[in-house]
Image 1 (cartoon, rainbow, N blue to C red):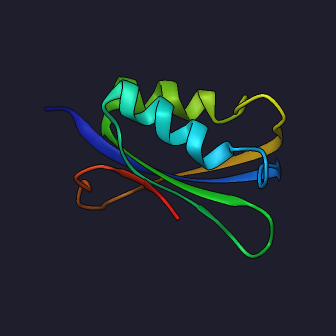
Image 2 (cartoon, helix red, strand yellow):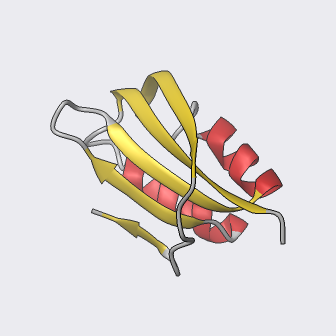
Length: 90
């Protein structure tokens, strides 16, 4: 399986607009594991692990987010990490 992980830091109006839950829903549909966590500085950290194509597509979706979100920047970094079993929000 062609699997890899990407860590994203998402900036903008991304807290209090169901961004983490919407990201989780998109990830589960795509078979991607990882997490979405609020950061104290107002950003959301997202870890995406899975098939390259699914991770790429979800990375692009991060720029849109759910209705109510206003994403201004997404910083992506490929990371070496063990694939989690599921996708969680915290």
